[in-house]
Image 1 (tube, rainbow, N blue to C red):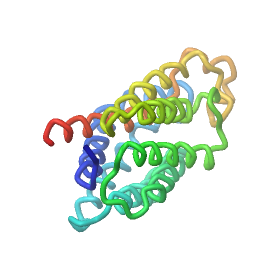
Image 2: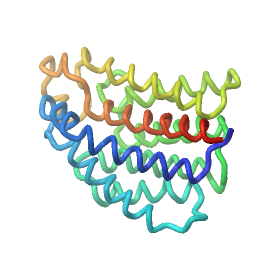
Image 3: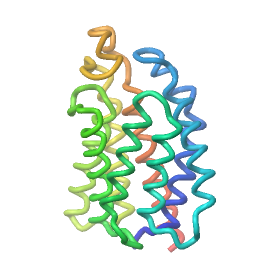
Image 4: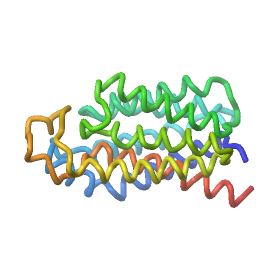
Length: 216
């Protein structure tokens, strides 16, 4: 099956719900190694996204919707998360072009461009204890799944599983970027909040794609 604007809208809605539910957990992770506002910032940002998406025309393309997520996050989310995720969605939208439906290759292109946007904005690499540690495994898993002929929903599920593993794998790392980098070894044992929220976002994409697959 392919994914279209209906899926993007469902993905955004699911992301907003999950980040609202998990906002306290994400902020607690951030309190351990950062400013302590990551969850509340993202919940507020995606609440604004949800409102603005609801005002878009029914025939808006996937790229139009993804770009709206980008501009909304950049304008409403404080700290590093807004620019980082905003750039991710912005680059992801550009990768989709004017496509009305997304096949497995388009899903990989979306995830890859989003990851590259995070890297471009944050100058981080895998192992730096940042959201890149969730995005890069997701991209690699998605590319492998698509290369083996998996449908889009399965590509997203592979990405989500890898992102969750990547987020968990940040716990023993020493942070080399952001506020957490000032903690040195004291950051060891704490999961990166940006990696965890990125995992939740990618998992929301997979969950909504699975729902679309059942309905088709």
